[in-house]
Image 1 (cartoon, helix red, strand yellow):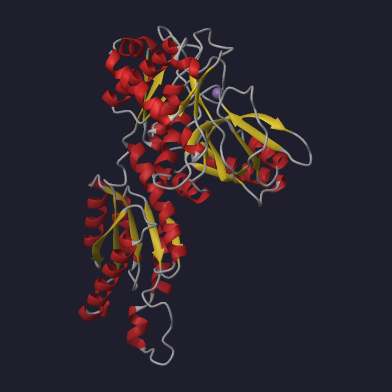
Image 2 (cartoon, rainbow, N blue to C red; image 1 turned 135 degrees about the vertical axis):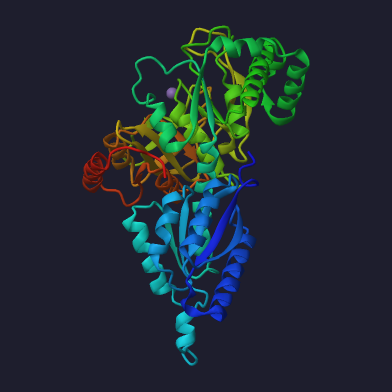
Length: 503
Ligand code: MN
């Protein structure tokens, strides 16, 4: 996943010729200084490049055209150090297809009370230059992020960090290919959706394959590749002794699945994939370990043909890259409804990504799988440490996609689960289980989610805004009456807006 290495954020300042060359030279050097400063910040994951100042409609349109056409440009930061009359921006904005951040900052943090004169006022006028800029963005209904504050404040860097991570996910998915091995699980509604609408809004293309195509690649994996993977497993995990003894064939089959699926995904240039236990054709086990290992490498995954969640897991993996934590495919499985301590146990049949285990022990085990009618599958089993986390889910509501986010607190239950043969997480949903579950259900939220210990609500909202996707947050401030009204207002808004999707 090289997405941040290949991405740069272009920063410019808007201005005009009214102020004279001396002032414009100061605008130039200040903008370059800010871009260089932001680029050097450790918390900011992408390169920030100074791209000059824009003083005429032609310069603005040229900049927007180049930013739109350049594949390395992940987004643009626009700053109005001075006043830049906004009619000059209209034609440029009409061609700009990259995410926009309006940085509403000022070069001087403080008013120099003793020395301030009209020269200072003419140079440091973002307080009203930024308002003129905001107007035309709003008038043209352009999605953008507005970040306010002094450019050296860490809080400003955090806002920019979140937005750039969202830009990276958008950039990744605009070239993204999702592979589906088999169709959606029969009769399930929420995993369905309009793939054409998804490509228009989110950019990724979903390819279907017969499971036999994959089975052939898996069958052709050579024994040496399998030997190498077994050695890797031995070095990395605690392995059930049976898998190295009487059940070693099952482990070799799991390694064969991993090698074959990796080859298929690499050769096709895919970033995410789905499987379904209802359609395994010539595959001996449901791929559990293989899906876990591929997610660990950065692939998105969705079970039961769920391509929307596969793509979402990938988006969160891109957003969270380099941060402590991790992201996994997840499903709300079982409740602990003790009124004094309500909790949710999240897991899946097999496919939970070990990046969320952090320092917890990961064991390779083999157990019977009650459904699917195939050989017993190998899987990684682990617990997940406590801490802030969230669940995110993407649904096709017919006239738009809805991204639903629930902030949760992962907890260590302190209980042994000796008979549970899958990786699992226990969490407390915010604001409380009853409110969170009711809001999730009123919102039509799926049982499948992307569970993340590193991605934040802010990143997801930025991502949804860039894509023109509805976002709804269930957090410490949620109350059901307001949430239901928000659902009704949003329904009205998206019905009136009509669906086109995209920036
Ligand atoms: Mn499922």
